[in-house]
Image (cartoon, rainbow, N blue to C red):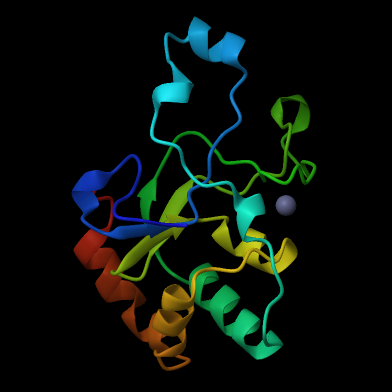
Length: 156
Ligand SMILES: [Zn+2]
């Protein structure tokens, strides 16, 4: 689940977490001139569904990743890979809109909607990421958000 770099912004120089594969109809990808079978495969969130050891850990991690500042803004949006239905967006929305920004704590970068997978679908991040989050004080993100934005904001 942890990638050495952001799949679309390698220049960030940060580890990335929570970027999932997109199911592309082979007919559509050939129309786009892409051979998606040959592209670097991103992980499938279904492979990481489990049980949280502890609700406290879940709440801490969800709150941490939710409250991180946005450092990249994209034009498209991401939809829930588990098929949660759209709650807004009218006729163009097919699935639940999970945002179009990437958030970061300066060490890792993740998509704006990453918290949804952890919170609603019980996708469990690797222990190294959990330890990274839990090693920080409760108010770390609040205190560091400005600094992270200044250092990495829109750095793609
Ligand atoms: Zn969902």
